[in-house]
Image (cartoon, rainbow, N blue to C red; front, side, top):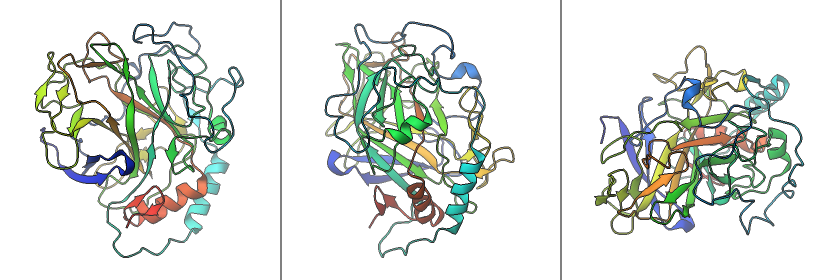
Length: 386
């Protein structure tokens, strides 16, 4: 394990029947599986063409055509997903300004909101969460390749069932059917699809927990997350080996002690083979500071940053909850290993990355941030966790 100051805790995954080892960043340092640095260059984001260029889908498994929402997605809360071509507006790219009137209204409501009394027995982890399930797979990326269906490598989406290449914030607010709990989280989250190297078949997530938490030792000045915020964590173009003990690798987790690096490795050394009841997991950490002006930036990273010393930098002064993806796969590892759609050739885990397109019911976001993150109390999908 690298020399990072981390704290390992165990949190139950409810109906998934797995307790994931959750890594909480302390003092703004790296989590065990690798932390994303802020301010990455444009070349370090997803390997998809810039908006406005035509391209065939890249990085997909053989014959893995883009598919619509997974079966069973219908009938969830909210309006039905839009039909193909229903969204004609191409999402804005580059420096996307925040709606200052909407943000001011959210901030005013947040400041005026009272906190709920804390029941006895509530923990002191400053976080709330959404527990999500797999929704659908598409070779789309509404952040990196907006308005260009099939222009990306294959992604596995969770959360908002309407997410596709042409998705804009207004779509997430209107088409609210979701695979997440609470249903007040209308956000879309996605990661590159994982494939079994022996069969070429996708291995989809069996649990996808999204934490909104404080990475600092104080919540002074804590603000909620603005709707429409778009962010990327990780580096789709990073293609280096991920042997035992390296950062940026998948790890093994289950209820009870075990070897995070696995009891063995795949033949190429890049993937753990889990023992006992353990299965593959991955942690992705997003920044906790925002510039207060933009919902996106040209490289999808420069408008946010990691705090340091319990404070945000002067050019990113707004302290927001830090999104953390805690991803579970129903796979134990094999000698043949796996590959990500973002690195079919290299077959390492280093190109693992995640995208978040944030859209919550504003009152719910404000209440969770104030009760849980500002007060530094542990919350689950529904509020205080007893």
